[in-house]
Amino acid sequence: MEYFAGMFDAEGWVTLCHDGKFQVAIEMTNEEMINLFQSTFKGQIYVRKRDNRKKTFSWRQDPGTECIINFIDQIAPYTKVKTNQLLQLRTYLNQSRADRRINRSDFVKAISILKKPHPYEKEQIKVPTIITPDESFFKWFAGFIDGDGNFTVFEYQNGPIRTFDSWIGAFNIHAEPIIYIKERIMGSVSQYKGCKFPIWKWVCNQANSKFVCESLEPHLIIKKEQCNLVSQYLNIHAKKIKGVPYSDHTVTIIRDIIKQIKHHNSL
Image 1: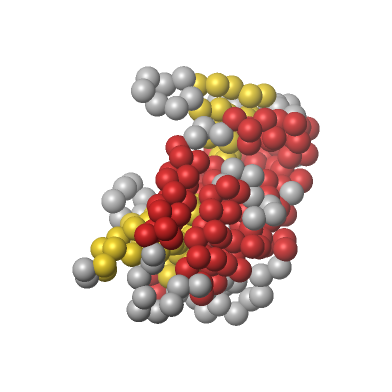
Image 2: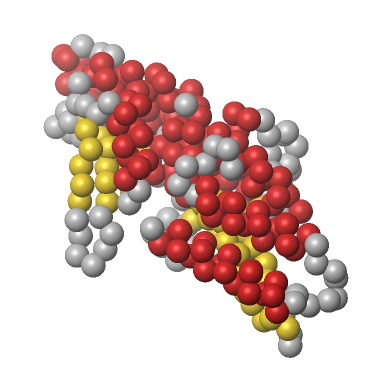
């Protein structure tokens, strides 16, 4: 259940409208994940086709009150971003119909406020890494990074030499999941301000990358192959002698890893 909570934190949403309509849903281009939500939690699947863009698949919980409450009860204990939104909706749905009509505006407002990212200063995000990550964390993290994360190997110019590096990153407009990750795994934190809400980003320290790949791989679904490919690169990098460039054969292997990661990311 931790995996689904991480995925919902990354890609899901909670809605309550002034007309009384309510919904929990998730939408993405990965059909396998949407089918997995449907087989686990029931609900409905919808397909949206857009010109010159990938098809998107969405899972929406059945509009029945009992179905949504069951979903919230299963997933809310493990979410880190959308917990309060889910619990607010649950509290609203547990009321009588008459009380819902009376209190609806208050709940609509409360959920709307919770959807907006809480403002943080960058220094507040740079928390010490003092918590030992357990399997429950890595299950949640696998879901979150399958939704809002990346595994990357890239080539760049370092003076006169072409060289390579890798990174494992997670990002979100909410700072809370980034703090949750940073408390358990060392990494750098940055903020991108080129959109409506700033995006917080965590990038794993190189020294921890192999451990993170090994810990995430059993739980990943969407980005499992990208994780394995980064692990292959890290194994190659670990054998590199400092100051000695990669052989032509090794460069070819790494470039093929980069090509494969790009291919999987495009699917």
